[in-house]
Image 1 (cartoon, rainbow over the protein chains, first blue to last red):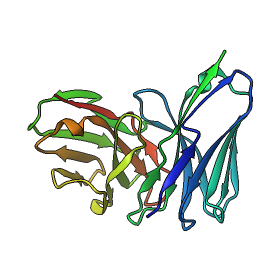
Image 2 (image 1 turned 45 degrees about the horizontal axis):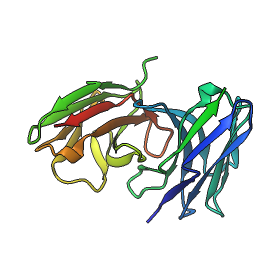
Image 3 (image 1 turned 180 degrees about the vertical axis):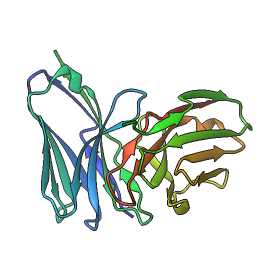
Image 4 (image 1 turned 120 degrees about the vertical axis):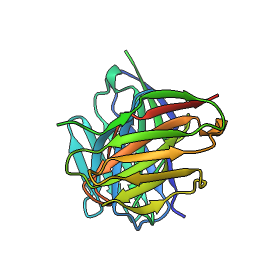
Amino acid sequence: KQEVTQIPAALSVPEGENLVLNCSFTDSAIYNLQWFRQDPGKGLTSLLLIQSSQREQTSGRLNASLDKSSGRSTLYIAASQPGDSATYLCAIYGGSQGNLIFGKGTKLSVKP
Amino acid sequence: DAGVTQSPTHLIKTRGQQVTLRCSPISGHKSVSWYQQVLGQGPQFIFQYYEKEERGRGNFPDRFSARQFPNYSSELNVNALLLGDSALYLCASSPWVNTEAFFGQGTRLTVV
């Protein structure tokens, strides 16, 4: 059974710091991996999609990498800002029914 | 372009009642999926529909049902509501299965 784990569960950093969020999955047979941002009580905002044939994707201050062989993905956020405070969710397209399988998320707090 | 729209945004129901949640996908998207997210957890897969056919179903009781209409919009129905059904219900649309998913803002269901 495919499982997705995100470490750490919560992270608090001062503004301007570079940080890394981690995501691991148990079965390397995945299609794609997607990172989302969720603000309290809101829906999910797509940040980056990494297709199974890709190793990384970049968007602005965000960079996500994918290593299928080791079952890991990282989301790197450069020069963090208070507006980056949110929960970050990692999800893989690996369900037998074409569904997304999510981790529990990392709650990020960036202090001014 | 309009994103994924869900209605209503919030509702309160009494135990034993029935509820219908609605989702309109992004124009041109043929796949709609439903997820349940309880506080502090990642979203859990409920249903996926593609081209009006059910493609997958998560580990939810038969009280949960869904359908997709010819215009690709979708409804999620939950019968005999329990307190444990209180959650944020998220709808996601994508062009087809295993492609990038875009989420709506969710429907917050409270069962009292």
